[in-house]
Image 1 (cartoon, rainbow, N blue to C red):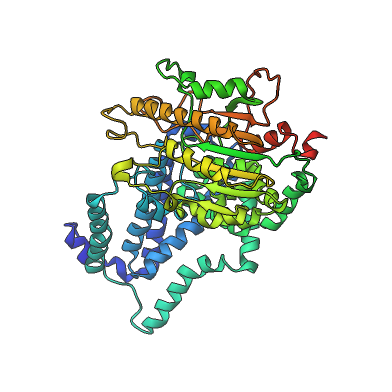
Image 2 (spheres, rainbow, N blue to C red):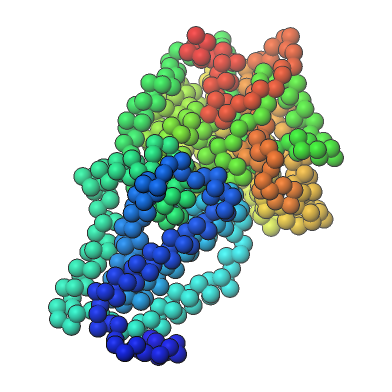
Length: 539
């Protein structure tokens, strides 16, 4: 064979490609063996042991059998475009190994393996390299990738003979394309998708556990199975159940004699570093909130170290991530399914003004589509700020954002209630030289930015206090920073939160409250209870 000659190996006494069926089957089985072996490296050995499935050998055999069709379909895809068994084997092995490598790299960085919704973020990774810490995606990377994909493919196409039948070639090409693509396309057809999703759901179990799924099915198998479930889950049923369980009769809002204002400030990557023995930092505004808060403490994590949208949606919706199943990894992909149960939509239907302010690209995480669906009347995004990164820094500062928030809140008519959700960016990494004066150490840069944000927070509180209406401020950090030079992972990834009455909502005889742990999905419910705005919560 030309391929074997080309790589300097002796020819066997017979031509392998004269027996296309056994050769193709052998290449597929070889691929399966290599993939089963390499899939183990998607997670460190310690994490694999931690997330080992709690069942016996029989289920393990079922899991292996469940992976075979996924490998077969990818193998069929490479075979369909080449009709070369050795190329198909090399292609499918490379495909799975690349997914495994990406998963391992992601886990090393943010302690989560690859999930199906990450595929939807591929274009964002290339578009927003700094926010994904993806600066290594440079020209050298792309040169190597292109050379590998096209170079190796070209070598196989040249050296390996095809096994395409000499007769009726177009017929067999179309048949093979149908075999390779048909099952994937059929997943979008209801009569096929629903029973397939039910079968996969039964195989995987009711609760989403990405790490365990990766151990059981490998990276790409886990991605495919989660995607099938995501396609097939009847969200109308989920939402109906949530509506009953989370019945929040906003039409029963009590309110005050004067229309209240709620400001929710989600502080990107904010955590009080004094929890970890850093005694050089001063955060007087945070200390002030701690004294004035109706409730404060540590906030549990929806996700440690990234994916702000998961915490954001948990706060806005009041939904426990487990309740929305596979949607929890990227809830804005199908925000419309939850429009009737999230807080902004409820308040809007009760006559409140709702405003989302986020000084970053409006298309990031699909917020430009999701937020109006979730009930926000107005979106103020990066294009509404006069921001020049070369002069003003990587992100819009909290000082500039605070000034804009105060300006917008002052426009709210006195007789109208309002919800303002503010998602800041100032504390986000990377914490590189140039962000704060002459500082070069990432930890020192992060601490300096925290103190800048604290100063802005003081101005926010002072400005809200001057409003002639009841005002409630919810301030929280969305997740711990990815500050690996300080801790990897953080010994306690919980962030900080405060629910604070301001202006006319401030009680006359307030006494400091003890700290109280809370979950993100309970923040607005707790606020409405403290503000005496929600009748159901008081029953």
